[in-house]
Picture 1 (cartoon, rainbow, N blue to C red):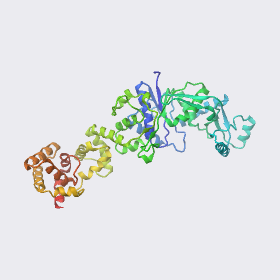
Picture 2 (picture 1 turned 90 degrees about the vertical axis):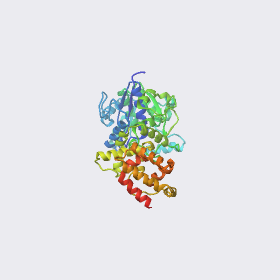
Picture 3 (picture 1 turned 60 degrees about the horizontal axis):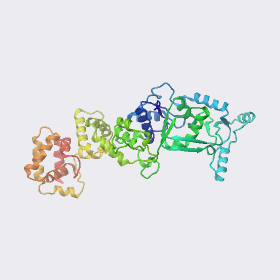
Picture 4 (picture 1 turned 120 degrees about the vertical axis):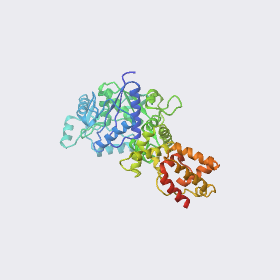
Length: 484
């Protein structure tokens, strides 16, 4: 394959959307697979909505996912600058070139005139497009409009016959009739280029070989190809990846849950899980395996296995993948990630002692197998904190009324009193000894201890719960629960 140069070109008008993250990931995988280069370009010509905060969010979200780039506004590169607002002179130069060649023209039509034309076309059952009113203005007419204070836009002169043919790596051959396109705006009246114009200039000058982006941009592509052809430039290879839909088969939006990368980070999802999940949104590996590291994705990813059909964002599948990564991540890393969550919820001070760190580590160890997101650790915190225990239901209450309970609790108190420190292995051994010495089955021992200490009939292993609680809190809970 020729030298691969791809780009991710987001607009900094909000936090990085999950769909944008998938586009960035696909571009990144292609660049790394073929030993190519990835460019990060910021398309900030929407002056009202673009912000530095959003740009920083894009940078940090991509880095959190493990996606890096070879050129961009933060690191520079041979085709700098990489923010469109810093490239306005370049767009003006090329727009002027099209005007001089008769391939673009100044349009002075007012909003009212354009709206009238649109309504008339719709009334005739026609697709609205530019009427061509200013296509062949004389110099005298142009000067008259300028004298009236009208600020023109620049429109591209679309050939009236023929068609644009796109050979798309995902969609196959797609055709658009020129007749249905109409002369489109390439520079607005304030001198800011439109997306369809700026993106072509940038992709050409930055030597982009492959444009991999969302399906919603497919309808823009014929306009862009016409601009490539007007300049006589070689076109990049296009690949339009499918939309992401919610479970109800409508376009992914806030009503389906979190939509930005930063939200998933805050909800306790691991970056490698989000990357793994995003890769499977529209791409299928040859084998049935669903768990892949970034390196494995780089090796296996190819656009010929990207589906045309929309991808469905399955939250349960993301939770399952995240749960897998949580179970296969070191306790030390999970502890570091859990500390800010517990601190924010008020369970920890801002500065931890070594003893408090070890306490958190024990809790993480206790619940690791049960978590699908790190934030779920908060659901388990009532088990590990507070002197009083609330019995979850009548069934739990009935457990404590069984005749063997006083014997079991007394044996537990004795065993704990004999232990200098409470550690999982030692507690596990002591619990087995209680079963053996009482000549009771495991359930008759473990269940009343669990209910007496937590109020619940299910949860983390007792040999983890007991060291977290400590002797003093255990005695208070036993006294309170048994008193009830």
